[in-house]
Length: 118
Ligand code: HEC
Ligand code: HEC
Ligand code: HEC
Image (cartoon, rainbow, N blue to C red; front, side, top):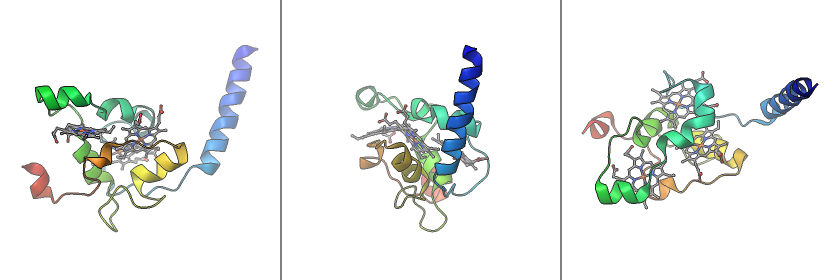
């Protein structure tokens, strides 16, 4: 009984989420660093850093780089992941009503490949 209820609830919420989900500008395309479904749920844990550790101890180059996400997910129109409700990071976050402060320090704009490689 409980499992039936659970499945029903799951079906309802995913239908609801599907119809309301924002249309996002994915950016460049290609292959995400992990399965998109996994990313949707877990990207925040993958890229978030202990700010103090990073700055004091100089911990760099974790498995996932924020600049990398931005480089691939920036809109082809203006090279940005922020700017409107269709832009990749902003669009979904507006919808989810979260406002990470990352871009107060990190660039939301795509860097030239040469610049990113240095
Ligand atoms: C080389 C390109 C590339 C890189 C690098 C990349 N992604 Fe992706 N990502 C994609 C593509 C393409 C999709 C959509 C795939 C699909 O829907 O089939 C995607 C999907 C996603 C999704 C799910 C979107 C949705 O509508 O559900 C999230 C969240 C995400 N990426 C976050 C990130 C984060 C965070 C990083 C950096 C750690 C990152 N991506 C790095 C190409 C990339
Ligand atoms: C107060 C400024 C500040 C804020 C806010 C901030 N960072 Fe950082 N972040 C830094 C500094 C400084 C470094 C180390 C220098 C570097 O490697 O660019 C860094 C490094 C990183 C790195 C490793 C290097 C890279 O480019 O991948 C990641 C990942 C990262 N930050 C993600 C985030 C995320 C996600 C957020 C938002 C939740 C965030 N940061 C918010 C200052 C900040
Ligand atoms: C498909 C939807 C979606 C996309 C696209 C997306 N996010 Fe998120 N993000 C979320 C949701 C939902 C949360 C809140 C999760 C929670 O509170 O548990 C979140 C939370 C975060 C957080 C943690 C914020 C906090 O204050 O705890 C960071 C950091 C983050 N996202 C970074 C990014 C970056 C960078 C991009 C663009 C490369 C991106 N996200 C794209 C849905 C998305």
